[in-house]
Image 1: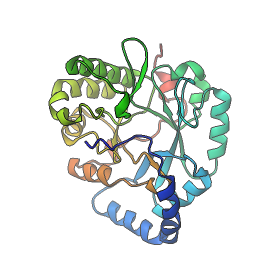
Image 2: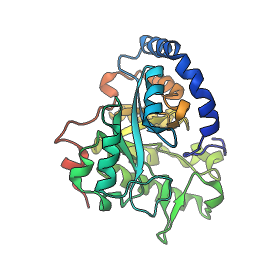
Image 3: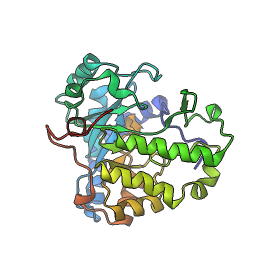
Length: 291
């Protein structure tokens, strides 16, 4: 994994320059997606991990239409300890966000931050979303501090095995939350990336997978990070996991799902293997116990 990977890269300059190109080539993009689907996928291609980040819903909706696939929009949500340009932090924030997305043809989601996101929202407010995704990349250290694992300069690890055990358990804890999608599982900070295969033992991977399957949490296939790797995905498929696609895209990077589609084909994923949002009354926040 390259040290240059960042979860929240702001590609405003490049994306703005590319917007005119993609919108002017909408038919070609739609035809390309149609060809991908005809090449063996028996389900609609949906990108459940798209951010607005400075582009606005109108522009993103145009890009979605040009690509010929559906987008699920997510905004960061949780306590104000999480530092992003926008953090939805209460029911009123969530209601305004949902209203902004109404009628745009997108699915409505949030990227729930850390482990305490549920403390600032009511169950009724969360249930109005189509889905909730979360990840373990904002890791909580022993002293309670939050470490943004994608920021290489902030990550200090003295004992690799100790970190991996705590990180695995933290990811397991995330998969027990009332979420729909576990995003970018097995991400490692840059300092550990060279030892990825050795550190992610089969036992550690299975602990995460088994918890996700037991709680009906889908595994995100993250195109931007090329994660999880095939070994994890094969174990997850064997265990009966559901999967979702994700670009983590902003602007014209939204909907770029090459790795997701490649893995779906290699695994032989079918419609029955793919995540679909739960209906009203059966969403995780409504049917799962919360602390």
